[in-house]
Image (tube, rainbow, N blue to C red; front, side, top):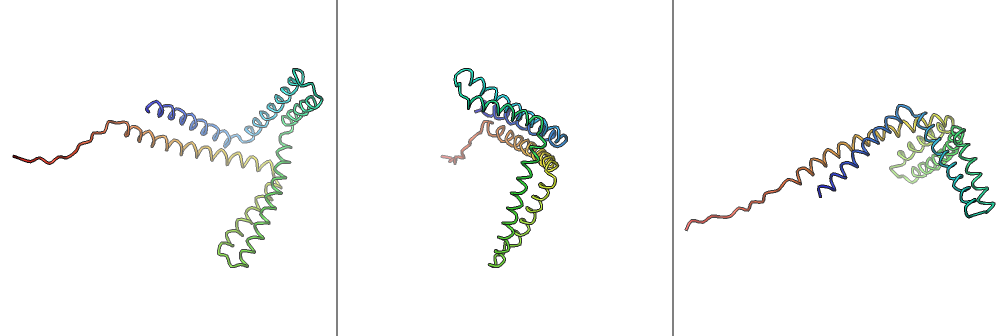
Length: 192
């Protein structure tokens, strides 16, 4: 049982440290972090393309396999070189979906008011906030990525602190529970 807790403790310390380090890096250097992650994604796609080409030469001599490998390598190179444009395009489309979702929620909130539901005002406020968020993402998508990276960084730091608190609590519980417990039963003594 003790070995299990030691392994769990070591794993917990690793996740606390990783969460704290990644969180601080995302908070302080979001642009560089997004760049590095984009490069890693691009390199991964290039490696997939290379693997597809290796498969083509080794066993699957299919034109489709060669074309797929070529497309993967080209896509990986494009991701590495034009990651900001790709992020901007994806977030622009995402922003449109967020605005549409907000508009649908806004209409639902108005319908809720017509039906005298008490929660309509919360739905209305949340839908307006959703529409505003979508417009911000559409207007300035790359800065939205930097803000999201910072929010993720803050979240990871909070996670690490919370996990550290839990780690300390569990350590105290384990320390207490592994101490030998003494059970004493009271017995009535009678004089004869």
